[in-house]
Amino acid sequence: MTVIPLVDRVGHVAGVESIVVDGRRWYFGMDYGSDLVVSPLVEDSGDMAEFAAQYMAQSDGMHDVAYWADQVAWADENSDLVEPGGNVYDSATLAAGIDYGLLYLFGAVTGWEGDVFADDNWDEISESLDDAEVQRRLRESLASRLPADWATVFAPFFQSGNEIPPKV
Image 1 (spheres, rainbow, N blue to C red):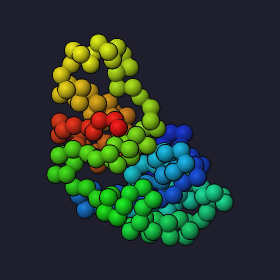
Image 2 (cartoon, rainbow, N blue to C red):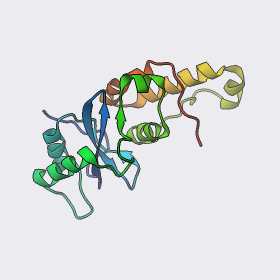
Image 3 (cartoon, rainbow, N blue to C red):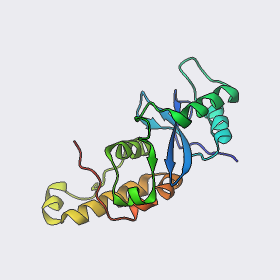
């Protein structure tokens, strides 16, 4: 399977992370220094190793598929983003709402770009919209900016109507 890189995310110094949704493990590249996800979600470990060998680097340069296969295997049980088990979700959990870790991850996927209320004056709308409408706009904006595979895997949250955690 050919995995197509995210726009402008080729050549980053990055590591491999994984997330489990409804029992299915998904891999992705993470540039920890820039807080950016640098790949789509990849279900097959071999495809992730091939993707990383072609499009990702380490601080000492590019590496072959065998090197990245070890990194992918590491990501099955380890993470530099979350504590053990902090990367496991199911549809029911997602439908109930997301945690700050997942909100951070969505920000890293979208490149921290996009203003939910870019066409509106926030001072005016914050007074005129109820909380449910603000939350709806936040979910729609975030879902529309995620690459298709990310929006599909996390659809239970985006379809739920539940709240996004407030900024801290």
